[in-house]
Length: 169
Image (cartoon, rainbow, N blue to C red; front, top):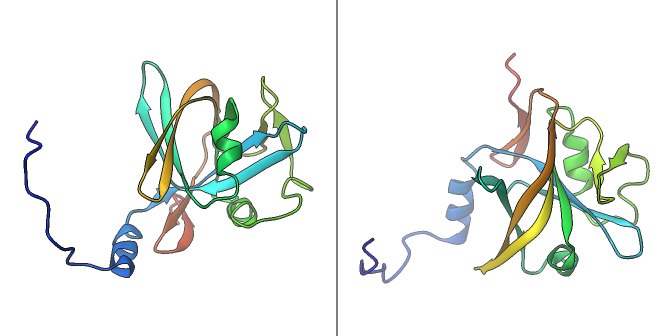
């Protein structure tokens, strides 16, 4: 591996252009959920989800350094990654904002370790919080999948700042 290639002296783009270029990549939408020590739940919307390895089964997602939930997700042993279906944009919006009780009137069940699994999702992954890597202005979480389930359906996607779906019309 050649690691001696020179780095660019300056960037030929600004933050706005970088964001616009990134928005061209359509991505799935997830809600990451966990249980707090007091028994309450926390959840957040994340589109930075990816597979890492089949053996062992590993996935990753990332969270901003300034997120108020960073200490919670960094310290908890488990969390669930809920992959949203095409008709669940309301959940993505709900968990993208701070709220007193975002779980209040939504349906969920509890995983083996007591983490909330949102009803109707297309897939979910219960993960052991295996490792975390600070990079730039985010922390990359690697989870080892201990349990998962799938309910095949059209997926919710995020592209160019808007929700869409994989449904063909």
